[in-house]
Length: 266
Image (cartoon, rainbow, N blue to C red; front, side, top):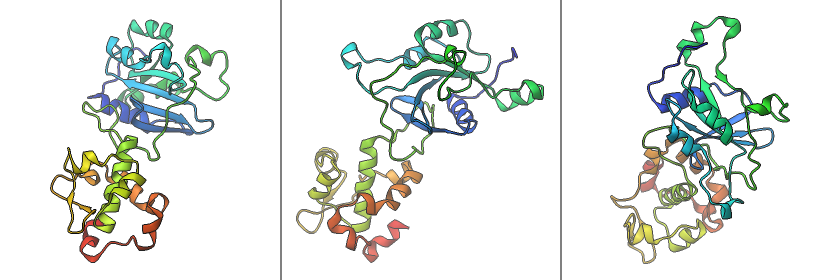
C-alpha cells in the first residue's frame, strides 16, 4: 500500500474522514481551535485533529498545545492528531511520534477501491478504543488533560478544514438566540442581552447591528443586523426549535410572532 491518496483540498479530506468515522464517535467541525474535534460517545474522550494535504511543520505546529506552563490546567483534548492523505506522512511522522502527535492517514474512495478486499483500510491507525491495549497505545499518546474541551450545544453546520473557516462559538450561539428572539417578538431589550449574557455595546453602539424602535428601550432590526440564518441554516433552526429551553421565562407565554413577523420565521 505505497500509493498516495489524492484530495483536492483539506476540506475534502476532512469531509471524507468524517463520513467514514466508526460508530461511537461524534465529529465537531472547527471546534476548540481544531479542524475537527472528535468526542467518544462512551466516555467523552476527545481527539483534536488538524488536517493538511501533506505532513509538514505547519500542521505539526497547529496540532501541538500552545498554552504556557501556567495554563497547564486549561481545556485540552485527550489525544492530538494530524490528518493527511494516505501515503503523505513522510519522514516527519517520526517527529510527530516523539511529540505525542498521531498521524492519521486517510484513504480516498478511489484508492480504497483499488485495493484487494482483504487488505482495504479506510484509515490508519484506528481511533483509540476504551481501555486501549499496550499495542494500541503505541499509536496514541494520552495527554491526560485537566479539563476536556467544552463542546458546543449543537454540532456546528460548518465545513471542517476550510481555508476561511466559520465557527459556531459560544458567543455565536447566544447571538443566534438573540436574533431568534428578535424575529419572534419583533424587538429586544437590554434585559434580553443580560439574560443571554451578551454585551449590548456591539449591537447598539459600535456595531450598530440594531436600531432604536418606536418604543423607548426596544431595539429592532436594520440593514446591518447579522444574517446568522444564512451563515448557519441548520444550527439556526435547531436553536429556534429549543426556544422554550433558553428564552426568558416572562416571554414564553406570548412568544408567537406578530403577523408582520410571521413571514420572517418561515
